[in-house]
Image (cartoon, rainbow, N blue to C red):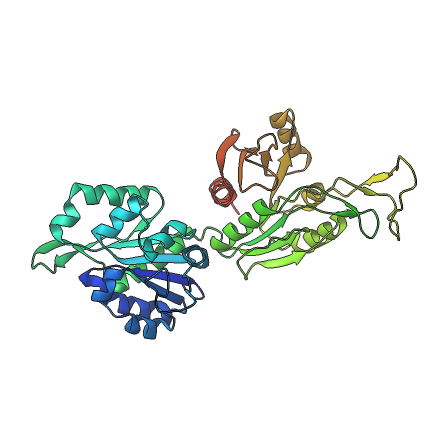
Length: 401
C-alpha cells in the first residue's frame, strides 16, 4: 500500500520521538520516499543525522538555512503539495493545539496547513495531559476536519504513571495507515476512463473554435480516482494543465474527432467512464490550408455538427457505468434529466456558469447529481478537488461498478 508513496514524517518534541527512527525504517522498507520535518524542540530528543541516514533524505527544521549565504528557503507549500501522506508522530499536546488553531510558528506546522494529502496524527503525552478536556477537544476537532487520529496506547509513561497516552508503537502506526488506505481504495482493480478540458476545431493554421474550459475538474477526478485505487486513463484536450500523478495514463488530443477516437479505443475495457470534457458541438465545414486573410467587414463561416461523444459511448455501453457532464444556463434540471435519458447515462453532473466562483477556469464549483436511482443531490460550492472526491464517493455508494 505504501510502495512509491511520498511521505512526510513530522516529529515533535516528546520522549516518544525516538520511535520515529523505527517508523522511518518501516516506511522506507515498504518502498516509500520519506522526508522528515522536526520541530525545533524535537532535536533535543532525536538527532537529524540519525533520521537523515535512515530516510536517505535531508532532515528539515527551519524555514531558512541560517548559515547559507544565499538564504535558501524551505518552501512549506511545496513540501505540503509534494506529499502523498503526512504523518506526525509523536504529536505532542503543544503541536496538536497549534494545529487546531492554525498556528504556524515552525516549519512543521506551516507545512501541515499547506498539505493537501491525508494527515495521520499519533498523540503522545502523559496520562493527565491526554485526559484533559482541552486535549480531547482538540483531538475531536482535528478528526472532524479530516485528520486521522491514531489512538494512543496504555502502558508505562515517562512520568512513571501507568495509563493511556503512550504513542502507538511504530508497527501499529504502520498497520493503521495501511488499513486506512486500503479502506479508501473503493476503486481498486477498476479501470476508469475520463475525458477533460476543451476541444479545439481549426479554422486555419492559426485560428480555432474553442471554449474556456481549463480541464481542472476532469484532472481532479482523475487524481481522485487514482487515489481510490483505479487504473486511470485521462483523455485531455488542449490545456496547459496536467495531473501531478505520473501513474495516470495521459492521452493528449485537440479536436473532438481525436477525443472521440481516444475514448472509443479505451471504452470497451473500462468499468467507469466519466465524460467531463467541454466538447465543441460544431466544427468548420472546411479548414483553410492557409491563414484566412481579412477581406471585408464580414466573414461567414459554415459549421457542421461534431460527433456527440457521450451519445456515441452511451450507444456502445454494455456493463460500463457512464457519467456525463451537463452545462446548462436555463431550465437546468429539466435539461439535465433529458440528457440523462437521451444519452443513456447512469449519472449526470449538472453545473452552471452563472456564478463567478464556479465553472470554467475557477478552482471551485458546485453541481447537482442526477441519477435514475435517487432524487437530485446538490453538492455545495467547494474546491474542485473536494468535489471530485464527493462525486466519486457518490458513484461508489450508489452504483455497482
